[in-house]
Length: 200
Image (cartoon, rainbow, N blue to C red):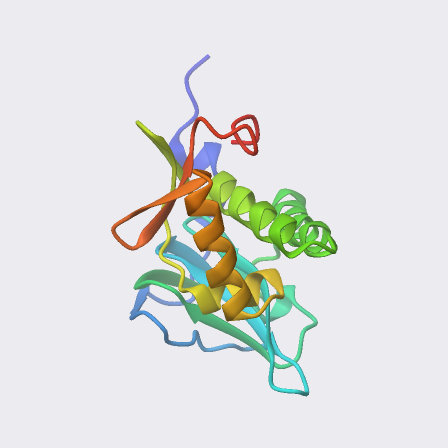
């Protein structure tokens, strides 16, 4: 039996696109329509929603191979913001509906964040979010797991449901305790740490 081709192994790669792929620079918003999905080819985006008091809730962070778009969310107002420069392909809802595995993955990632943020201890929330990011975007290096996406302290705060001041303080503490260290502008979860060695 012959090996599967790349498109057979990953049906998302053969989706009917509405137009050629588009490039968006960092910290811009993807155009949203009720009948439009975006397939992320490269880069990282976050889906966010603003509450009435002006605070930001990060609903998810998505990378290459993920599909995002207004049809997948009930949040209003929904914004999909690029964290890095991204390449995306538009897909019309009339030509394609996400299969069960895509919807399941989308829900599982969102559910995991809900469970992490339900913790009442701020340090546990931040640790949980860092583990989640490492599982999603981690790259094993000699001294641990590099979170291969550049997030500001405010990005992490929005993701955790904490204040930026709290995140900055906790990151400093984690660094002092040897749980993390910094590589350029990215974070590395120290491999020897018992707090997340078996989680990655």
